[in-house]
Length: 269
Ligand code: PGA
Image 1 (cartoon, protein in one colour):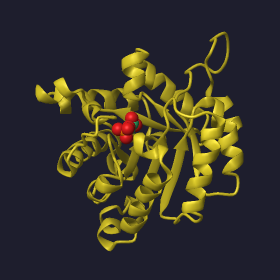
Image 2 (cartoon, protein in one colour):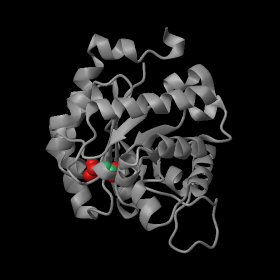
Image 3 (cartoon, rainbow, N blue to C red):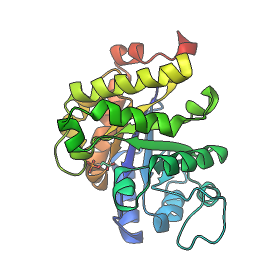
């Protein structure tokens, strides 16, 4: 079974006090997390160590929002994969649309970062997704296909299953507008088909998250789609009640027989 992953992308919000307060509120509302769901928070770089300390005895994982592709060196202002691992991070977001749009990250760079992350056993969450204009021109499949193929190029099956994909239609990020459950499922199934053409049955073990204005009120309908394996949540992850609400929705769905059946991995069938 593919385990749900509910990941909070805090973006450039909150320093030490905010991090401490939000994590305390999450832990108060949700002391125990079901084994069927992975929960991840991605605070800013400066709050990572603090979050890792504060979550020491909790099941909540910590990830970074970005990293540099090089091992080390004269790259002022940057952070490497080994630094993130040493700090205690287990995941890293790569190629978020905001990084692509504002920091000129292209597919080649995202691929390079992804390979560096994998070589450090840091699980990459690679973001793909089309702009509104591309959807209107009916180019969304073509765009997502080329982003996905570029990110996974050169990987073997063993590496591919370590990667998490986040489908984030750019027009749904921070806008309050969400892809319908049908639109999400259609794209997630398409991504899985592309991955199975590259990696065969192993593609069934790759988690594909949905991101773009996910909140407690729409989480159930999105997460109950067979190929939606979790969420990458921005705005709603900054509020403990909303974030925990989404985690609890995933927990409830993961024990429902239908979801479990549709998510059997090749080894378990
Ligand atoms: P949002 O952001 O949930 O605020 O739309 C999602 C993301 O950018 O990862």
